[in-house]
Image 1 (cartoon, rainbow, N blue to C red):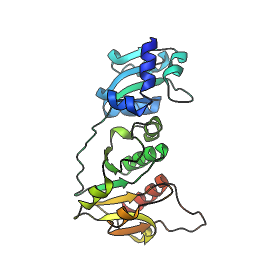
Image 2 (spheres, rainbow, N blue to C red; image 1 turned 60 degrees about the horizontal axis):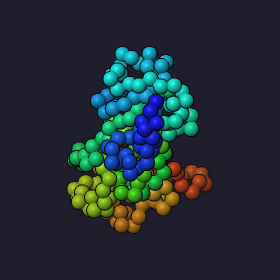
Image 3 (cartoon, helix red, strand yellow; image 1 turned 45 degrees about the vertical axis):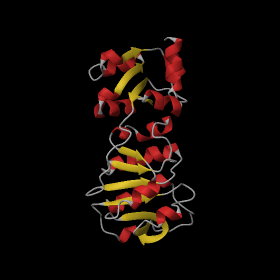
Length: 243
């Protein structure tokens, strides 16, 4: 494998170079399988071990596949334990149209942990939620930890990064639900067909400015002594009751 190609792929681990190239890296058989099923045209390059190629030759475009050895995969991988295949993928739409009417939308404020953001994408996908609005200081959607945590949901859930307070202030006709520690018990609420559910920062929660725009405060009833819940876990529990 050419040194220049190795260096180029390695640079995609950095946000600056990902944005310049309009590409990101995805790794591992399960994730690559999901991306191939969702939109194979987005996969621009595949670097894989011979065994993986033989198992998947019917579903991959041979024109984008390069067979490599394990030691070569280790050089280009972002993972501590490289796993059979790495893909260079075209980034998804940067400014998707978010239509709140007749939809449930997630809004995330300052979710900075990449694992949390990726898991929230996967949870949204599980519950059939197709759009998320993020404040600009949320983790980068193409961070390798985000991508790995989504397990392919990155291809099916639209993300819009924008000034969250301004965007929410424009949604005057849509109910906004803010997840807090002192809101209405979600276990006694009816399912919703439309609305915006806001989840805040892992340690600070939702800022006062965003909270002031919410029409409803909701909470997961606490029975034990834990101070708070992980943001992704809390999002999953809320969706399980409201969606």
